[in-house]
Length: 443
Image 1 (tube, helix red, strand yellow):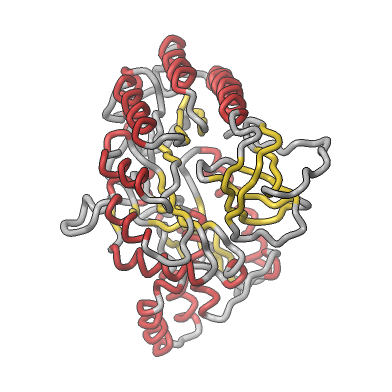
Image 2: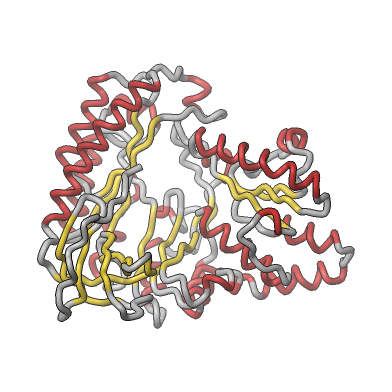
């Protein structure tokens, strides 16, 4: 979501005549887009913001914009008192406070009114900054802002606000704009993406929206995340199975495998419910890849309860597990009513146990691709290798002198590891073996 937000504000600045620079010291405007889903991310945001203060002192005309979940959707007075050198505070997904400030600073009120009106008309063109147009192959498209579910550990509802589905015509127009700018794959985003349209009478469901997007000429692939076990309907799964452009890859977090911990998290389902869902997904979408999120060390989690989570992952053998150690987030139910009782060292031990387990699962799963020919959408070249992803979201590297950006090509897999695979374009001679294989750590 933050990637999409940053692209949008960069594009808006370009419409005002600004150009990007790689050095903060050279910038006229600095936008710090923040995440606070974990304490470590919040600490990094504060650290980076503090590092910008000397720049502001040397150059008072520099405009500093703090944006995103650190600002949130409520009162900004505390942040303003703590960081008086910040000029603009912008809530998530909203570049308008910065745009208004820049125009007002030049005392161009007439220009302000005209430009804001123009932005409303051109809103769906403000998608990608110029540097990424024609180069970005896969892009994110938010369709639901905020969340109203309020899991006990999650700060998102307090920072991004209540669930708000975007109008379908706005989403379709933005999707068309992305494709016109060279994008081949779009990932629809929402904190609970399956709930798209449920807050607005007359809006289509996510399944119906997928069918609308499927008709866009030039769009090769569609994905969506993140799902919630309670809202993944048969209609949605049947749509994924039926539509060729919708990729067979589902991201549906379990968060834990113990019923008491799930209840304390306020997730609204049991371990048995989650296992049945995985079975249903696999039965409806043959060959599907499934990713999960897991939190270790939630308040009160015992060793036995953790082992229930470990066993769930061992039994289900999911393709990807995004792992996190529980982090206290101020204002959440867990922070208000529960003690952070699991020591940090124990959180790390449990994290590493799951990490090692998932590495072995992923290695076993990916090994089945060895010798197979799969379709890969190539995104960019890193050093001597082109990088792309299979329909099931597996990372593949290929050596080729061709310009493969944006192409879907058949690739024969020649090597597999837990986090990535090597291959050669179908019909080409094998490349020499390399001494260092690609590796991506889980996190």
